[in-house]
Length: 486
Image (tube, rainbow, N blue to C red; front, top):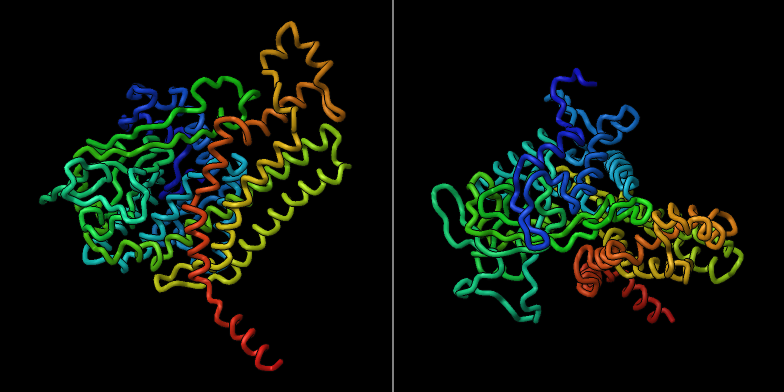
């Protein structure tokens, strides 16, 4: 394995060392991060968890699932950078995405394959882009594949004014949304802010995509990818949920998987021309997502992950019910049955999207839009209800959960006696309940619910998009024919 000519897959150690060496400008809790990110309490857990994903690329038992071979370059590379050209290739892609997702119960929303899917989709659609911009995105893609790069991304403006008719114009003195303020022989100058870069500052690069809201002004129309340590680029992080967490027993998910979201500030950032692939092309703002099928490829990755997350929720729900002996109650069976139905619906929609996939004009096998959009709308509305079922199954058992230190203290014997369950000793029962609490009630868990609720955008707007795009003509004609015949 190690003797191959071009091994374009990194190990976890290489990934972590690379991020530590970048010295990205990241701010959290009012301070700039100094020293190694892998030692910082806010980032060490997620960096280690991502490192474990990269290590699986080298594991003989999982390498064939997670990597691909290029015959032309004799190169082994990460699966997310492969352009799927058949339904079989899509199925293999799903298997790899879900293998990675299983390691976190689907709670890492920005595992490396998410934005890498975007890089692959854009890079293999290079003929979509005007002039030399097609060459630029192709080179960005090849560089990412050859070096197994990790990306964050941003395509949202700050929430200054969400009224329907608000537009921030270029002549506004106080720049808020990031825009082009100048250009020269070297590139374009970006100034302002963008949302919402999950894992901002702990990836190799950032992918910046167009925002539709300001598309009438060319100053806001651009797309590029630059290293995360580009001068003037700053990542302003939210509070870390993991910063004071020291026990995996107490916070099993927060400890390892808190991704940390950030505001991205561009302080007169120079973006080299060779890094730009959309510039002042008003027509490309929407088309870059639809004609390249970027939206559908990203949504496919997300639904693959959400299936795994639903399995995790079902497993948790069943474990809670079995441990405390409540599975014979019909209201409990009803809640768990809805979890089962959610899982089977999501799996069926994913299968339908695969089976009805078609190649686009760039040769990419794209999953069927309709079932993916249905899955997207359905899960955004359903996930919060599944979390509520965990609350109802655990009931007051979530309210007074002791910690690992409590069990190791003088009161440990009391806890062992009074917190035991029908089918588990006290510490085992509490450990399970803490896992369910961390997914559904902790700061980490609350963020997970909000994340899934708004994963692909506003649920109402997305429902409207589904209605508008779904062809209902044949069904209306059926009604007309029925009325004519009766």
